[in-house]
Image (cartoon, rainbow, N blue to C red; front, side, top):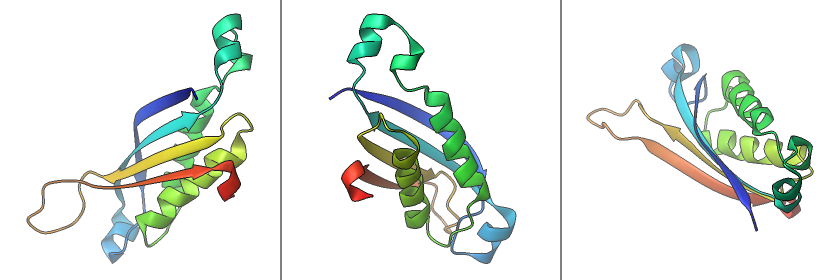
Length: 122
């Protein structure tokens, strides 16, 4: 199966366990892998025959910006489910959500959570 991979969607949001994360917010990075059949678009060269991934980028940015969950597990699952609900073309999605500056003392890495969902999971 074919897929479109969109990486590096940076968004500012207010999901987090700590009170300051909910008030001050933080940057998130999201990567999405979208499984769909692109064979028709490969022949026709028409955007109508594929997925306009700008809509997926906008959806991800909106969800990160407006959601106020305690856990990033809920946010990443909400993103995956919403992408599948918004597009009839997408059969499976993989979403990786990262906190590049998690508020953990003496930790300079990033935390990432990845989920894979299919239409049958909805």
